[in-house]
Length: 637
Image (cartoon, rainbow, N blue to C red; front, side):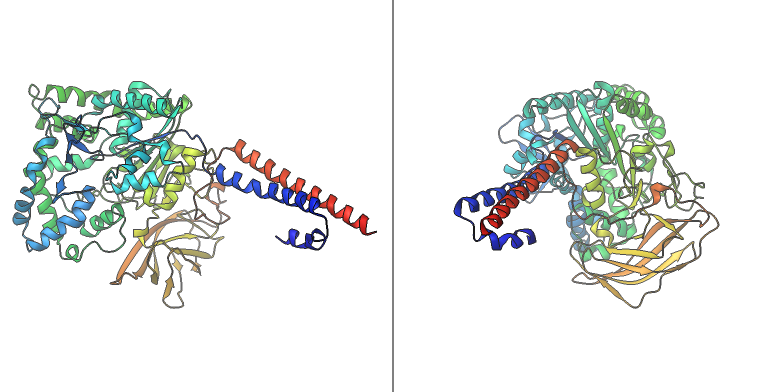
């Protein structure tokens, strides 16, 4: 406030009337500040409907009753399990420890819980055997503010997504769908829900944020009902062409779990950076795989094969063979009819459907993880659950295969993804190492989601260097993140001699021990151990030799996460080195600072009005104070 301080000597001597006038002008100046604050939360934003993934909606026995009995997620010892991740992360490890690692005993103990799943069974026609289904009511009953007031327990992933959308909770709705049924059975229900949301909100269009299995449901809805009521669609890790996991479940003799990957996956889902339980470190991969396959074969497969949704998410290229092997053409005729329609008329035409929706004026974007094997142990390039090629349409090679070559901006830093063949090449973002549907837990992905929903600032994958088409996952569980100064994430140039390394943890310090390059001549000397506070970044100089052509390489970071019991960990980040004689494309350059906060949430017209208001207030205040000053000087003369 130096300007007002300089005015103090003469303000002190003017009469009360002039003082009041000056204070009014100053008040006008400060009145502009609340305008900025209010503008960051639009008074009447386009409502957002969250379409959850597989198992993401609660199911009830007699859902039409005032106090229906919850049957999914299961209720154990009087407490509802919030998610499968919580079940795996907190209940299963304890059972394994109590059973001394004996797979048969663990399966037998979990089998005692099997009767709780009886009510979710469907018949051979794909319809419920019991009066069960999702919660019933008008869309107004499923606004996020109402859900919270009821104390409704929800999956942490959905809760994090809703809580990180930069609009009031009264503008966020959750679609409670019966995830057991085929999308063809629930598309009309979604259409009716959209009409109710428009009625409740007073808007004539809505935004959709569809997650995983919900992404496939959004695709089905757009195909059957069109996009006239849809303003924007964000597909998060969508199972557009199914997943190979369903194939592995039906055909493989066993899963080959990576205990380390499974633990990281669960830690991210339940929003917990510490190691889940010491029991997990004593679980052998073979034990975990044997337990899971016995559980699936004994209790889950008989249920799943009657779920129309299970056949919807079966990888398209394997569906005909599995359908003929597992379904009876007479007994399962209805299931087969709907599944055939999904796999013949909708899923193979995803590219055409999505591009037609874009051409109609609806904004569509896809956010997907990559660079991980499937949870089943299959080495397909995936986000641990959904194949990259299924979610995005891009060509994705498995780790260990020859990388794509050339200078296309749609080739990923590890050289294993060519997004030029994606459903939407200019509107698909990839997060290397990001676990399935973890957008809400990844700070860059969630900010990007807000820009895509509530702003026109990010038009495509090349419009903002903070949001390049390819990024490394930035969830706290990852420990460390890095990029080269002057470059977007994932690329290195001879123009840069600084490596920026950041502690991704929100809670714990991280001690960096070493950085080793694989596949490229690059040396990062460390002065010793470097301890970084949560969110802190260190700038490190390095020596390198520019390659003769574009060259994918990895940086391996060894570090200690300073948990209550410190753990030694490594993280590998993929980069592409750009040769010195290649002109650096503009979309790969990044000069500036990355953000730590969410974007302002107002339209350009609102921003212009704020600038005019603020500028006018400053001008008015300056004129008024200047007039007072001149009169004061004149009276003194």
